[in-house]
Image (cartoon, rainbow over all chains, first blue to last red; front, side, top):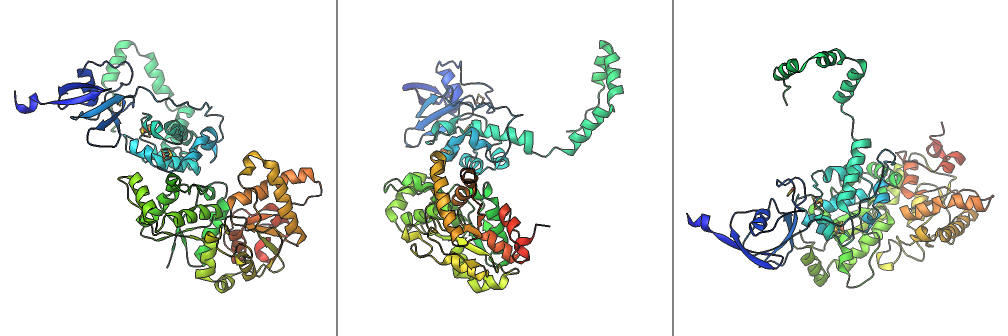
Length: 229
Length: 292
Ligand code: SF4
Ligand code: SF4
Ligand code: FES
């Protein structure tokens, strides 16, 4: 074995020190050390936001935030996993809310407490301008809140850090829902397609499919023409 | 053309859209357009009075950093509340090395604030950089016969260090009204507090104050009251319906932003004007417009 493959690092998980092979993600390093994830792991590919992790390096005063399945474990890291962010979500019926400027403030009034410390932004593993979307929400700009928070994976790290008790990701999710339901322009091709369906343009093709037996269906499926993406 | 680095503030994007619409339109014809800074956050709303509480200066300071990033050293706002908060923050940290150092250390790897941004209110800019003569020259519909009561409230004048005019005897709005050929109304409560955020928990207090302020303006002959603050505007406008319920003879007083008054006279987009004003006056073509 080469020296590289032999290399190990020292990490501290909740105060206990372990030696693990170099080159593992934080999540893999923790599993290597014997931890089993019952909570706090999901997609293992950086999409679900379940694996929020907090760490510090020996030489750095800053607390760092990351996704355990994405960040590489480094020598001297102090680690802890965050299985859940305690943050209540407001109840609303999307069909019944009034999508005017004040709606986000109405359901999440604490956004008015933002002191612009930017701590949320520094905690975000998705590099989202979290403070800017809270500020956009505060001034009633739902479209901007939705756009700026688009990459949010609901990990909750921003919310764990906020001195103003703001529930950023729940609030932003509401903004994106309102945007999708009421504010985003309806694409022309969708309207066109819906009209065609209502006018029965697709009916005869559908009837043909319904009339097929299994064997014919399999053949038809294999012979289908795919639209280019 | 010269331009101004403009900070709108949250209210002007929401409750007070007509303030922004009229301010933008007016400044365009006065050839000193307002150009909104690309990124900004809430001004902080209320200036923190605690000497060692630097955290609550951050909201203002972040805006100063955005101005700095945009290559400017001046931030202009028309909202009296934002003006007051931003201005006091700037006086608190500009040229205060120790405070700046602490704040910049807190912001850590972010861009540091250099402490050089000056805060100005739009009325000051119009007075000092444009001048009343030029406003008068740009006027299309003189407001002759319209009696206008200026309402300053607190935020434009107090504390003295940030006041855009003499807090005991302000003239800046009177001069503006004069320039538009309207009649400025003198009354006792032009710099009286509207009750501010007490509207949230003690609405009855605001109703009382609105009554005192607006009745005084009415007795002095005012047809309309002009303000520079979305909160004053809200308090003076919205509590009048309660007054009407309490006092059947109470007659509604139209309240609008000073920039709307200018917009009417300069014949540019004024945003939504108060209904009673449109219904009761047709001074010049301007005010009468929209009546069909
Ligand atoms: S905005 Fe907050 S919840 Fe969303 S990804 Fe960033 S830190 Fe996580
Ligand atoms: S952490 Fe909270 S208070 Fe600080 S900028 Fe973000 S939302 Fe505002
Ligand atoms: S496990 Fe889904 S983001 Fe890490």
